[in-house]
Amino acid sequence: MTQPVLYHLGKFPPAELNWKSLIPLIGKANAGLARYDGLLSAIPNASVLLSPLTTQEAVLSSKIEGTHVTMGEVLEIEAGGEPADVTQPKRDDAEEILNYRVALRSCVAELKERPLSQHLVRQAHHLLMQGVRGKDQTPGSFRTDQNWIGPKGCRIEEASFVPIAPAQLGSGMDAWEAYMNGDGELDPLVQLAIVHIEFEALHPFRDGNGRLGRMLIPLFLHKKKVLSSPDFYMSGYLEAHRETYQERLRSVSRDDAWTDWCAFFLEGIVEQSAENEQKARAILALYEKVKRQVVDLTHSQHAIRAVDFMFQSPIFKAPDFTEKSAIPKPTAARILAMLREDGLLHTLRDGKGRRPGIYAFRELINVAEGRRVI
Image (cartoon, rainbow, N blue to C red):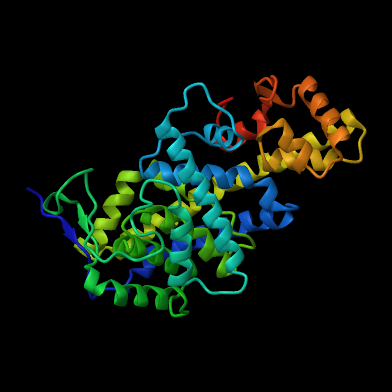
């Protein structure tokens, strides 16, 4: 039987990296992020326009941990709908994804005045685990017992990886935090690669470590001023290369293969920068097109507010539009009817009696998903 790989005690941070092999990738990754950040800086209210991509990132990050729900299902559940094939497990999955979004937004707000820290991570974990599976796993507190990674239900002897022991976890997290906030590394993207993999290797919580580790990626890039806003989405690459991702984690501890891990991570930044840029450009183009369309359709001074609401909430129930779009209610009701009649909004559920109608801005959802799903 293959022995589990044990945490690399005493070998963090890495004593040496093969910079010669990393430099070409560092150049490509920084250039890709610079192009993407240039686009972010040009997008008015990027947090609104790119909010579907934030939800999609939460979906993909949770998918790596075994969830099975789509962005459309999450948004419909959030809107109070009942997708035809929704099951309780899917509803639970959706709650995890909505928590991820809440935790990320909370961290972004906190980072305006505070550094990235263990305290911030514990706060994020507390929000992440509220009311979902793992809620009994001491949310917001570091573990006090040994955990391990492997097939569900396996014993520690059958694990693929065993993180740091509880007795050393405190000093391990202190070293991780000091490295994350230090300026000793030659390149911030290499520093981020090491910050991420070390967090996953420490596995400081009983549950939720993967999602938190991936959440740290955009937070770090924003805090280090590599990106002007924390709108960077890495989970698509890590989900597509899940087996390699997990093997690279083990190889750092087993073979001291920090350079191989950094190369894999930098390749991911190159790939995701291009994909994120393509999706952001598509969303911006859609926004400009729909803005003109809704202005011409409604001839209303509130047209832009209607468009902004649709981008922030691509699936919604009718009362939310009339109550939360900052449009006078009679005007909001009229605009909503016009958007439906024009085909900009797709009806997921007709309103009947006290049951409100639910509508989807499917063109935006399809752009965020990268394929036609509605």
